[in-house]
Amino acid sequence: KAGLMEFEGSITFDDFRQIEKDNVQKIIRLESLELITEQVEYVKEDSARRYLMYENGWNSFFDSMAMDYFIIFWLLVSIPMIFGSDYDTEMYRINRTTANGDGRIYFGRVFIGSLFPVVITLFSIMENLFAMHIKYGLYNWEYPLQSLSIFKNTPWNCSIGDAVVMCFVLALTGAVFFSVVIMLSSVLFKKNLYAIIVAVAVCLLPAFMLKEEIFYNLAFLPASYMHKQGYIFGYTDMNGNEVVYGMADIFMRICVSAVFMALYVLAGFAVY
Image (cartoon, rainbow, N blue to C red):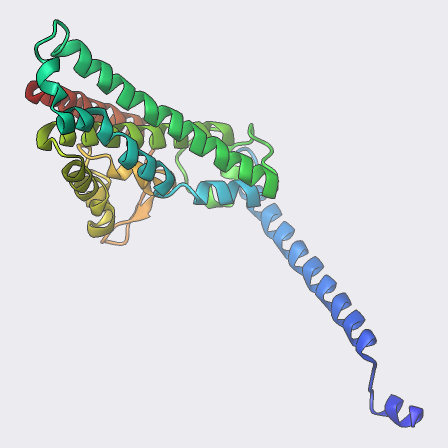
């Protein structure tokens, strides 16, 4: 019987599992070798700006730079209360009768409403970095950004660490801008619910309804900064052309948006 089993090629279950395990290890080694070969070839194309490195952690971090619903949630929960509580209790009538009721209270609250997004954005970015470092390991911050193959065509001539700072700046611009729009809506409509509805409608819906070439040129809205992957990776327009943004272009857009933020704050003060 044993001879017949050997002739038929039969094996025990344990032997099968061992062969399967060995084959899996061979496949993993082969895939790893192919990946390293691809990375070496990629680095050779431009060795001055591309260094050989482990990409998974950084690729996952930059891929996660999409709409941050954690920040959006906390801004929608907290910012409407800055002015909305006064309108709910009609304390704004009393504030207007005080010596500092017009200017100091208003701009003080705007300052608080602009400071909270800084804290929550910094927390979100740091939490993301920490999670990716624990899972993958984030090293070589000083390497050129093009060392990551996902940034093969980027015009950003900077290090990976500099790109992280740029992502923070984009996220912070969107968060502060979103807070300003919420505060303006609170002052205009004097109801928290209306302020939230308007803020969501004008800031978030464009990200899902408009073409990217239109969406990323709306400097008077924070939506493009909150959905910032187009600034980081670029996008393809309706004509099939690749659109990428240099750092100078991004900073120029942020400056224009800062002017709109200031105008919104002054408009809110005129109504308040």
